[in-house]
Amino acid sequence: MSDVIIVRFFGIFFFLFQTHAIWGNLLSSLVLKTSASNSTADDIGTCGANFCPHTDDEEEDEEKKEDKTPVYILAGVCLFFAVCAAAVVALFVDSMTRYGEDERKELNGGKLTGKRLALATFKQMLHPYQLLIIPITVWSGLEQGFLSADITRAYVTCSWGVDKIGWTLMCYGIVDAVGSLSFGPVVRRFGRVPVFLFGAVLNAGLLTTLLLWRPSPDVPLVYFLVTGLWGFGDSIWQTQINAVYGVLFPAKEEEAFCNYRMWESAGFIVSFVWADLVCVRPKIYFLYAWLGVSMVGYLYVEEIGRASCRERV
Image 1 (cartoon, rainbow, N blue to C red):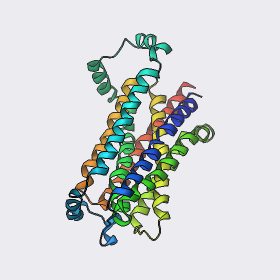
Image 2: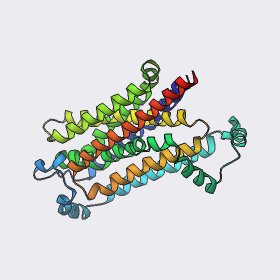
Image 3: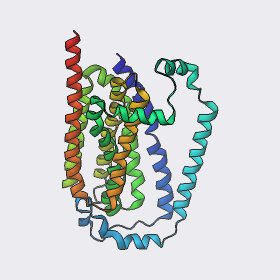
Image 4: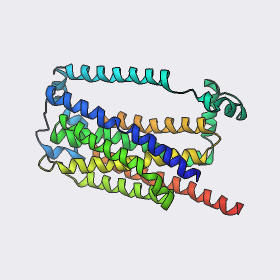
């Protein structure tokens, strides 16, 4: 029962959270459409899986000479909403002490200071379950970073134009949000493992599509299908990995979710560091391998959990 409640909570949270892709990309699309150049590669055969970042250095040099007004507009609007969000949280969100947070911390040994939390986070890393789910946590960052840094650049911008990124990512955000909300009933009926397996098969299929697909603006529907299905896969990873952490470490939430954010961020870092260094095709092969390793670790955790339950019975 607790599994279902946790999944439902993260489903509602990520449903609301993922709508940022809708509003943010709607704004960026309108700004870029009216202000930015819509240049594409001279030969779209160099796009997609054949894309290598060093081949567009000359184009980037030309872009640097363009008017930066759209960038300033987007940055200013984002800063405005960030300040508004911080103000809303500070003024209107109830303190956790109202819901017994102080009592819970006392039961768990008192409040964790910054230093104690850091030590507890690294100690948590030595937990066998934590070690086994680190790869799938990193995968969550890798797949999000690959969409943001590579699919948008190598497939959408290269062959269709930079002003189309926002529209395709809006499709991603809509499907991601709806998918996040739908997994509570699915997990309750079928369990968590089939959902994870479906997500792995879906992402493996999309990686295969990205290897074989030669993007062309003559068939725009494919861009939306790829980003939309990628969003559906992301909704699985976001809701279910968070739920796994909540289920596995109910008395160590702070340490566990610090590890979650740290390792997910590591995936983001890798994605954006290699964005300008490695061609798209080897990245896809790497993601295949990492997804396989991630699923092996996760399934082993599930098997250990079932075995311990059988022993208690």
